[in-house]
Each structure stands twice: as C-alpha cells, then as structure tokens.
Length: 321
Image (cartoon, rainbow, N blue to C red; front, side, top):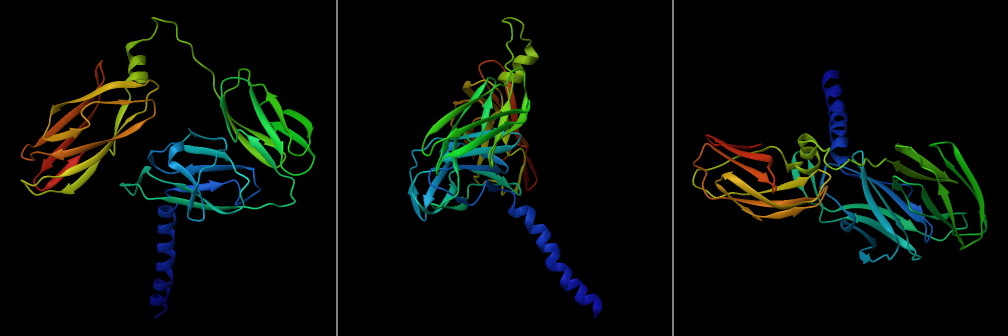
C-alpha cells in the first residue's frame, strides 16, 4: 500500500517537472510588471524563433490594439531578443503580444499568439524614461534620461571601464549622457539609478579589398539554412502532400535571386526570392509524385550552391533532412 501511495504522489511531481520546460519554451521576461506613464518597458524574449521582428510585437490595452507612437526597437544577441518601448501616457491594463511569428516547440512549427500582461499607472515614485532601453554599437553612445516625477539626482554607472557620471534632472526635462566605448567588445551593463541597460559593444572589421578568400566569402555570403532540418511522417503512395519550411539567410550579406534546382518531386513556391541578412521566408512545397526513392534540391545564389534539403521515401516513411 505504501508503494502505491508513493507512486501516486510521485507522478504529479514528474509531470510537473516535465511540463515546466515545455511551458518555458517561449518566454517573455519584463523588467517589471507595473509601469509609470511614459516609462521605458524592457523585455527579454527567449525561444526557438524562426522569424521574429519588431513588426510582430504589439501593445494592447485590454483587448484593443494600441498604436504607441513611442520609440521602440528589437535586437537579437546570444539567442536572446531584447526589446524596449517608451510607453504612452495612457493608464490601465495592457499586454505585450507577439503575433504572426513562427517558432519551433517540441519540433513542431507553431505561430500561436504569445502574451505578457503589465499595467501602466500613475504613482508618486521617482521614475525615469530612458532611451534607448538597450545599446548595440561600435562607437561612443548617448543615453537620454527624462524625469517622470519631480526633480531627481541621477547616478549612471557603466561597468565596462567603471565609468560613473552624475547629474540633476528637473521634472519633465530630458538630459543626455555620453559614454566611451573605445576598443571595447562584449556585453556590459549601464546602471542608471534603479534601471539596468544592456550594452553590446563590437568592433568593425575593415577587410582590405581583394584580400577576402573564397572561404571567407562562403561564410559571409552563402549561409543559407533550411528550417526545420528534419521532418518525419507517414505517407500513402499516390497521394499529394504539402509542406511548409523556412529558408533563412544567417550570413552577414543580403542575398538576391535565390533559386532552387535538383531532382524534384515537389513544386516550390516562391521559385525565386530575396533574403536580407538574418531574414527567414516560408517555402511552400507541394508533392507531384512520391515514387522516387530520394528527392534532393539545393538553394542557389548567383554564385554557387548554398544549402540542400533532401526528401527520402523508405516504404511508408518519409524523412526530410
């Protein structure tokens, strides 16, 4: 009897441990849940996104879309998306929603809406509006600070070189602070009173014309990848099937006139496309025949093949890799 009780008690714990990673596959972490009108909202977004840009992020008040005219931006650094927006002067219950974005969860391509709630309410706290909410640069940078309530003394500490700057700001006035990034690379933090601003510094590499090798060209130009890399399913001979996959340009250069070639039993739409750096687009594949043992196609730029995607039929099992 004791063993049965132990098993029953253990099952919910095991299920709970299993469900947590699944639920946390896509996560929006806000700097806090309650904001002052005009304050800076900061968010870190994690997940196996295929496509995510600023146009996929919306601010709703209750169930109504609110078009904030405030400054906002989104960047991807070390597999984390950093987002910020200067909130409006409206008060109430709001939500940050990610819509029309594709991501992988447990190997499945999803585009479900992702929601994170927050509130905007006027208080008597000494809060700030900071622009930008993160920094990505190879130069010295400027941060704008505005006091939302009362005159405030500001202390800004940049941990890259232990730089500390102080100033006083009158209510509703905006001041600028300039920080040096000379010869610095990596991730740092800028702490302004109770706010923390992520700072990403890098150095530009100027390649002398004519010194770029063929391998270097491959790395910067021909970095196309198919997503997902593996699809498995059961097929019936003679039936038609449709697939959606992504083609991503993970290189540093924009690519144009990408075409597809090979021994195909699938029609591909679009037949020609362009991809900016770090951009993904959907490919629609529709089968015309599954009688061949293997079908292979490659994505090509105007120079050379960049990546390949194979469809292999083994009995009743179709493997795409």
